[in-house]
Length: 398
Ligand SMILES: Cc1cc2nc3c(=O)[nH]c(=O)nc-3n(C[C@H](O)[C@H](O)[C@H](O)COP(=O)(O)OP(=O)(O)OC[C@H]3O[C@@H](n4cnc5c(N)ncnc54)[C@H](O)[C@@H]3O)c2cc1C
Image 1 (cartoon, rainbow, N blue to C red):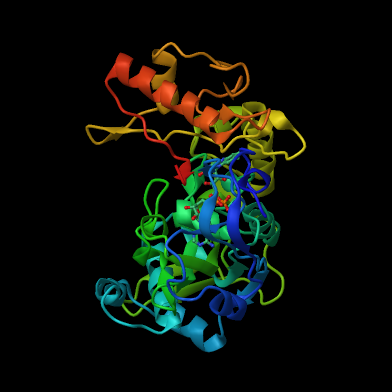
Image 2: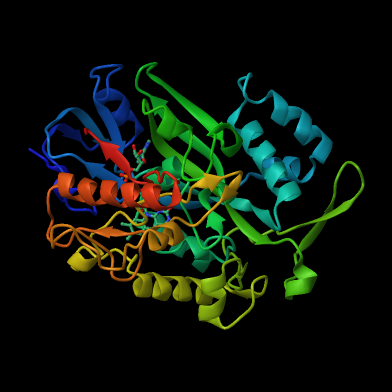
């Protein structure tokens, strides 16, 4: 029988009654019968899970389709994309949640939304990935294809399905900045649906998929992006488009087969800026940003390596709490409570010696020992600051 211990980056957790690995959508629909069990979990790389040592009395689905493909919108779709006024977008967005739309309509709405709200603008080419693809493989593909917007999210050890469910984020960027649409299967209704990012309730480390675990993400489409202010960053778009309202709007139109190799990223995070020797708001080549992020992750002890037990963790164990509408640093609260780097209760499970937010399980101790340390940290923080920390890690079967 499979065990969570072998399937999670915290290297703990008990037996799983039934683990299935559907390779594609039709296998998934065949294997996962509507409501065939109460206990059900869709999982990716197990990099954000703490599963108890008790037997998981149900079905765990690890969807393994890991394709990552570049697609261009068809010429017709491209013309349509370039021809939508912001006004039309607002009207159709408000209707989305109630009506059934074609997938293309959903994509077009998201595309326009991006153009209006971000400093990056989408190219009329996109990435399509299976939920089982490694997120970092997708980042690497996007950066080498010349897309901005991905490099800061390098080195997160999840799958495409996991990072969407979690709305993972790092160094000032989040998955919600990049998703166009998600295809998912509801095991109770036995139905497959396509959602745009706007319909996914993506928030700080959460999404509709975390609130309703009956959905299994099958695949997702992601923008390829270019900078919106090319003149300020030395990037020239190949085409300028007139919208219906008549205003000129630059679109990055990438060649059919070969995308630009000159991606750049705006630096939004202090420690990344310092590491690169630039200021916040500066632009740096995406490949340099990716390299710097991977180096920083190694320094901070959050670059997962299955051969190095000092990296056995789930990344940040706690969320940064919101207090009076303001997000505050959980690491600072932990420091304030007197807990130091390397702190341990049992001499085995410990706070990382490089990062107060990370609980490390180098001896593959039982899940209950990991939870004991997490609870201790929460109690200490609550006692000294009056603030209740919440785990970012998902607790399973406790
Ligand atoms: C060393 C290290 C560093 C990390 N750094 C970061 C970071 O910088 N930023 C960050 O946000 N996170 C970070 N994490 C946490 C983790 O990698 C992310 O939360 C990631 O998104 C989890 O993806 P996963 O595939 O491992 O999902 P899992 O841990 O397997 O599952 C997490 C959640 O996603 C759901 N899920 C997974 N796949 C599917 C699917 N196909 N359909 C529906 N739901 C699904 C699960 O049900 C569960 O709710 C880090 C973890 C480690 C170990």
